[in-house]
Length: 74
Image 1 (cartoon, rainbow, N blue to C red):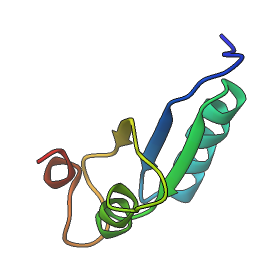
Image 2: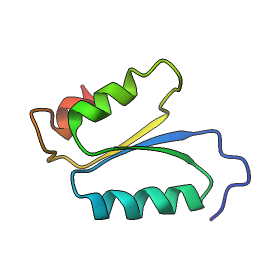
Image 3: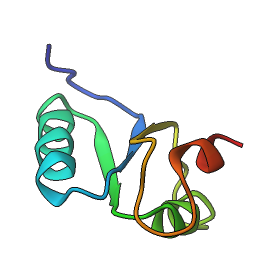
């Protein structure tokens, strides 16, 4: 399903670059704006970025580093 004017920005968080890239490209194809992060720390930085707002977070539970997908949800 393609969206002509999707306003939502989705943060895709996954430590596996292939998985993250495939998901992100599909979402872009559907018309979403996508921000990618490979670690929980990168995701937290994206969530706090002053230049854009994240509407949806799609995250793996197990992430590289100290911050997990569960930590992000809190």
